[in-house]
Length: 613
Image (cartoon, rainbow, N blue to C red; front, side, top):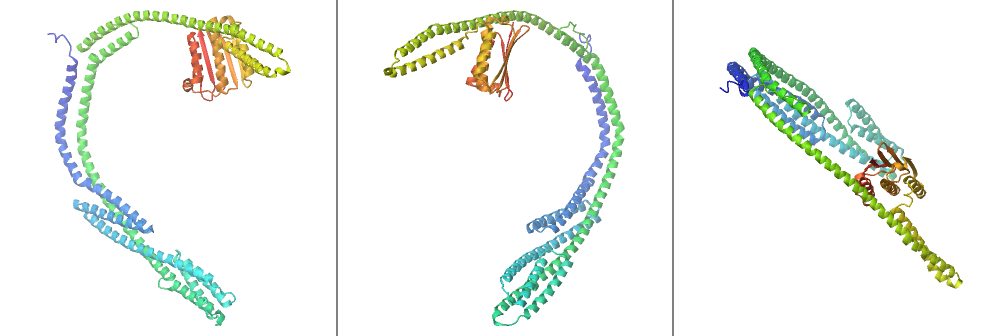
């Protein structure tokens, strides 16, 4: 009976649409099970035949393109190591292409094209062997040419060493021999055939002329040695030119190899083009068959589209109905509860709603309980916080009073110590100085020179000690601070400017003497004094600005320089500079003020101290 008085719970609300969705899904699954049996058969056929054929033909076309490129690269290389590597790789890839063709043949499709492709790949393998043979012959001929060039250079050196001066016929012979050597060197390079034939014809003509010049040499005893050497060089020259491994036969053999190479190039180009055409036809046929299979698959899939669309519409309708139902009984009550809690957190009064599903209502009751407890605790906390703030304010005021009294007592002790130094020790030092000076006057005789010298030194020491005592007295408490802070600052800045003439000091005081409390005057003086001392020691500045002003109830002093600046964190850790900065900060904060340092390397420094009345 208690359950009948409540609307459906969240579990029931979520179960009903899920049950409808599961029923529709089971019905759709039964229909799709029978529909996809036919599609599965088509996919199996495509997986067994069409897809492997398309894959193999695509790979075969790529392999044929690679083989064609590597054949041309093989014909262009002149390195034996590279050639051997290309030949090995080329044969392996030709075998791989043959295996691909065999796999296509095993599938049972496109038998004529596959057999033709295998025959052409076999022919390509033979062409690769022929190219390898020709390149080997070409390399041998090139090595022979290199040896022949060395022989020609040796003959040239012998010809230069042969001295035939004074014999006109031998001199003409030597010029002809030089010309033959030049023509042979030209033939030993890579020439086109027509130009090589012209060079050969010209060389034969020079050989005849040289032979004629040598035959006209008179046979006299004093030149018989020259004639014998010339004949020996002539025989070597003819052997180098026309011997079995001479330059002219090598040129002819090179010409023959070039012709064979050109013929192989034409044959290889035609065969590669034919292989590419057959492979392209195979790929086109495989694509056509795959497209037919795809079209059949698309026809069957389109038959299921209507059923799927209907299922989607049903699912959307169930989702929409579920959303509307949940929005009314779950989402909207939760949103109203959330808005109510937001208003209460902002300090507004709002009633907690109790509507929606019974779980939402129970949650609202729990929220109301927790909110009431939190508000009660907050009220107690505010009362406790107010009491603590009052105690903190009292302790803070007491600490400020104690700090001011501490500073005042410190300055009083400084004043007392400075007065004692001035009244007691200073007076005593004065009496000592005057007594020594009087003794010097009494001893102003020629025989008292030795006594006057240590007394003069004692007088100088007493004077230095007196100056040191005045400096300590001034540091403990400036003598003119009681006259007024502004007057003391002007005197100090004047002395500072005289000591550091390279610094331009600008003092601006926009405040009346009566506006500065007595307890802060010595603090202000010490802050400015310490700042200027640090600037002179560390900053390297050329300009310093001091500003003392009162803005409303705030007393503010700032010291700004254009020096090298510093890293604040690093400077606070240094012994000398950090001690001065910490001392200034402690003085300002103990007197109830705020101390701020602004500085960056190469951008100057600004020290600011503020006190609020």
